[in-house]
Length: 149
Image (cartoon, rainbow, N blue to C red):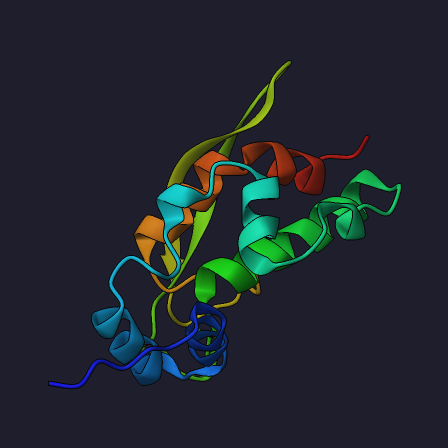
């Protein structure tokens, strides 16, 4: 059998531009080479995976900075998936927070919507696991996004 050599950058570029079926195929051919939630512990980790500079998401205003960061977070975690709000049978998940006076928002749970639109509808994902992970890992960014300072 002949061995095929492929540059990692070419595989990663193919993965980033592939549709969901293409991504599944590449993940099966190259296990462990692509997105892993567990590899993301900080916003800087996320930026490294996305190939962007974290400073590009700072703008001086805590709310707008948090908004910019959350958009990137969901773009990376959703890996090309976009919610279809006209599809009532497609579930969409987002983190749910409990506000604790003195410490701000802390991750509480996740929720889903299927036929209505809630505030922050763009900030949703396709699985409960992703919503929970985002909520726990980036609670500090959500705190800046959801509170007035």
